[in-house]
Image (tube, rainbow, N blue to C red; front, top):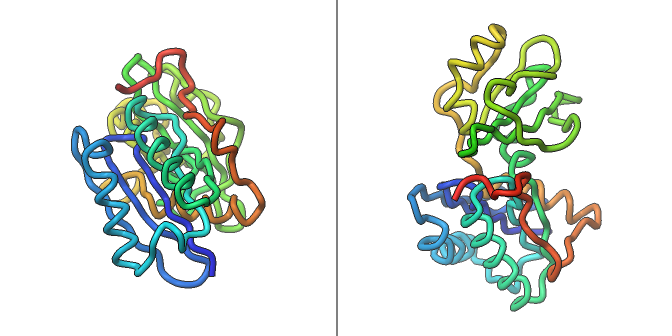
Length: 224
């Protein structure tokens, strides 16, 4: 059985989770202004202890690589690198929105993950549903709020992410056929980061531990 730890610190939500090739995952999430800086070590310790694991028993560590908070991404990546270096484990870079979209079932034809930025822009990634899974269309981009719905596929599009929550009224005006998650919009998930990381690791996609750096999308790093 392969076990991967996932670390998500791209937003004010600090989330740590596990993914396994055989067995249920586990997760702890904390939302606070300085959650990543103050709670990440405790969250990692709690998740591993509850699962009866140690860093040495992991097969790898997946970390949310951005876009997102400049400070949060640096904290998450630094912690993940230290953990991998000390335990001799591979590190896997997981784009934040690739993990976030997995919180919604692929039942709509397309999905758009929007992440809030503080420069009059949103970070955006677009996906299509293929055989019950989300497949990314194009790359990650920073777009002006007034153009956030431009260039999206025709037909119903599921919008999720903190950017879609903040700009829901504008989205509905631009796209009357927009769809949104039922209930509360899901927060980013360490377990989903681990899930994507598990797949990347199985495909031989471990990152260079020394060279790995966050993906910001902007010259100015977005959120503080």
